[in-house]
Image 1 (spheres, helix red, strand yellow):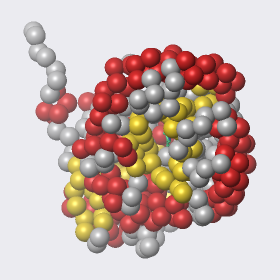
Image 2: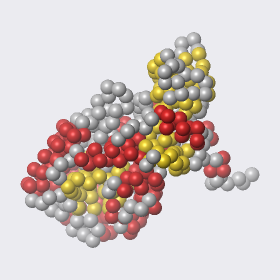
Image 3: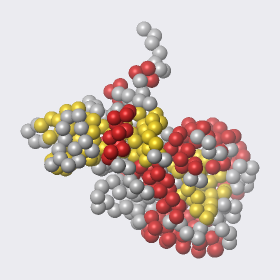
Image 4: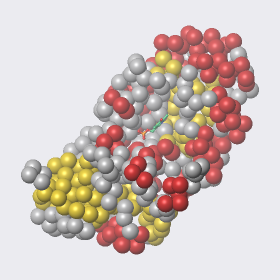
Length: 403
Ligand SMILES: *Cc1c(COP(=O)(O)O)cnc(C)c1O
């Protein structure tokens, strides 16, 4: 697969203006196939975590690859159905939602992943053994990286503690429930296979108490590189280790189960770029700022997670590298990149912010009454607009003027 070229990105910026998200369809496909191919000799199924990026065209590409979906709200479930996924291909993994939402999803035929004992009890009371469900366990394994995106630790609101298994068992037995899967999702940044495997072993142990399992779902946490030299998940190594452990588990369980994952970031992060235009170059006593026509309203990860997103000047790639802080136009300190070496920036240049496929557009907002940007897709040699930029009417549509 050939990576997207600056020339193609500049053409997109010229065609549709900036700020603009551009996605590369073939990159999504190659990431999906690479991940799927890393698990050999096991029956592996991927459910794309659609909260990363949910444009209908992206969902359709991913559906075309044979993926299912992982949805975290009833609205995501409905967007998945609208994109053509069948209900039974969608796993709904809610947390702290009302039971009515869960019932609504069951009525649609969506699979349910339960992460709370009180909800499990209500589910059993309502459906008994008629509707199978999956249980989300928290193995309390610390994933690497930023604590905001580690969801396996002891204070986490996610999942049912592995130490509460006895209680889970009693609820399941009382209502004669059918548990078809066990799930864990330890966090968004996992450094190596051993973290995964430690959690996996705990789930394998727990599995022997559930005779009706059809799958084990190990969530996600597959890391991609955001900057040169980043430690990334070695997918092939992790795949072969987990496949081996899973095969051994299946033989001790007595049946071949499906092995599930729910990747979001790994599939779409690198496929996306945010193109922005430099409005001003501002030299202060200490810093040279490049102020762009975007900000935390379009890409919040640098402020929210202290995430690094690589920035290139695609208008002047051969310019002399200089130090810049790239900042947004929002009335907040919305620094997109601090003290970066970037080819000389002139007002009017187009900057490419990389790794803008996952948790980028999907976390965008309207702060400062700014409009969410357009999205474009380069796929099969064609460039198309896949979402228009918002208008002022979009901002005021639901406002009720009473005075
Ligand atoms: C967010 C989420 C994922 C995806 O995580 P990535 O780091 O984007 O791969 C998977 N499963 C669940 C339950 C999630 O909430």
